[in-house]
Length: 194
Image 1 (tube, rainbow, N blue to C red):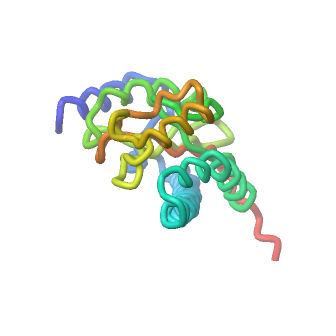
Image 2: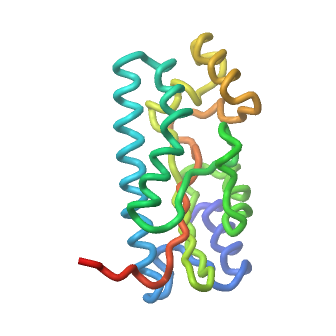
């Protein structure tokens, strides 16, 4: 176990009761974790499809517009379909609407300096809900708009500055921790109304 992973295990052990990794979560929390993961898959798939299409049709400049206009809409569609709150966050935000939920904020901040290989997902018992936090690595596609500032095309930098004046989400390299997907899933599954 690396030093960063050991530190995280110690933090979890000393942290709030009801804090787990997905593997160590009690059996009664696992169905909610599985529901969260299905929601994350839908969110990730829809975002990747939109971004890939935007990049193909108009390059990185078009992708910035899609992220600005479509990311929260896609998350809202997944929220409605899945029946629970979910979203994306980071230790370095581009969109100030994406601050981490209070139960996740300390974990997001602690992991900010860790190598991606040491970052662990988090499950938190929130009483009637289960909080799930999964790390997102920086993929090759991401660095076009989130990479080192000097490597981002000037027109893309200008558009990012205009849309996100408080942007802090550059300087990432492929494989870095880019951010997190989070969900708050009710412990009781919805009744199938067929």
